Image (tube, rainbow, N blue to C red):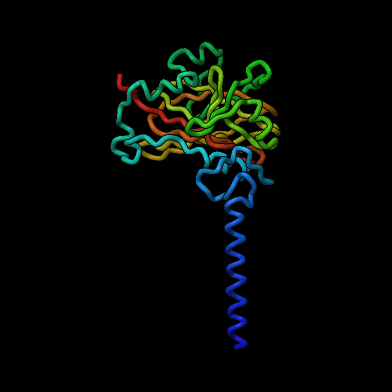
Length: 244
């Protein structure tokens, strides 16, 4: 009898615990709901660790999956129509990019051109876009983004993004926001016929920096930098050969 009472008490405690967990998942976190739910919006998520916060924001915004991407035999040889590039036309140019900007093309063995200071006051974007196109106004992004993170963007005519589809041979302009100046390691991992990493160090100024990137190889280019032991987010450039 004594053991039966102990068993009943234990079962009751387990039930109460499960009930509490259920309430937490359905509303205990406030209007956000269960943090493990796949449809949660974490744009406003704040963490004491800025790196974790940035990682969570990126993981919630996956890039598009092309129909043939799972097949290595097709992804790198498939020629795709211009309609795939058109949503991203403001973020790249095909010819004369470096001449117009008055900057040198990336040297052999480099990843980007040498960073230069960027006056955000004279070229503020209208919107910023994560992953597959989820975006928000730049003014709202400033209120939500942690202040001590290293941010990397692809600059367009009016907006910034962290994902682009472009033809091979395109030129893109990157913008990095760095809270503390210093030497940074800039990394490029190209997923093509083989996975080819590239790395070089560059000097970044405090605040906004701009640099140029040349998409010279078909494949998925993943770009990020590390400065003062703090990694930036990853930007992805999917490079294809046009059908025409």
